[in-house]
Image (cartoon, rainbow, N blue to C red; front, side, top):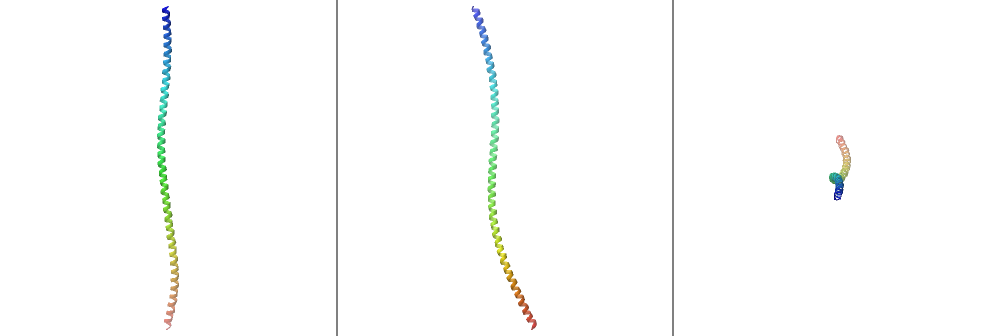
Length: 132
């Protein structure tokens, strides 16, 4: 009877050992799957880190470009104001030159009248001198 019990216990032990070995194999298989999944997650995180760095760099470049555009617009605005002031000065100078030209034209007309009067007086004087 003891031999039968020992044999039964040995069979139960062997069966339990097989079940434990099967469970250990299952745990090892699931652990390998988990390691693969963790590796995949790690790889995805690394790619996301690279993408984040690229985005950060692009945003920085865009900010620099926006700053440069703002500066250029400000410079252009100042240039436009300077041109407007210059045009105002040119307009004043043109107006002054026009007034001067009008004054010179009036003076030239007076001189023309005076020259004509002198010419007539000279002719009258010469004709009197030659008549005498």
